[in-house]
Length: 90
Image 1 (cartoon, rainbow, N blue to C red):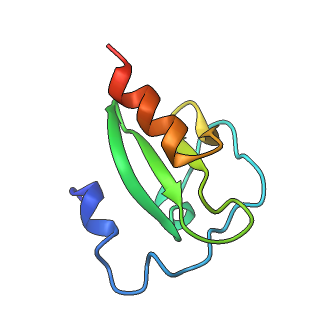
Image 2 (cartoon, rainbow, N blue to C red; image 1 turned 60 degrees about the vertical axis):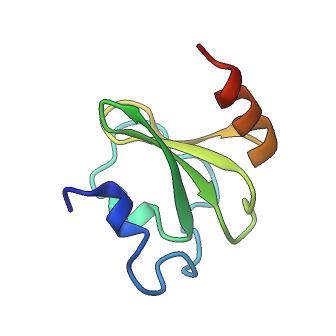
């Protein structure tokens, strides 16, 4: 899809289980399959997106997906910390 935000509007997508049990560093071949059970929070540019995990053992964690270089990894243990940092960043 051209609209990354549109994926979250697909029926049942947010309720699906988050498929990762541990970080996935490196290049990712099919990033859309990995974002089940997450909500897009921000676009960082260059195909990098920040997502909130909605269910499973990582519920409430903030993960960043960078399919070209960084993989899909946690960046914050909680929404409040991530959001406060995001609001105060230059």
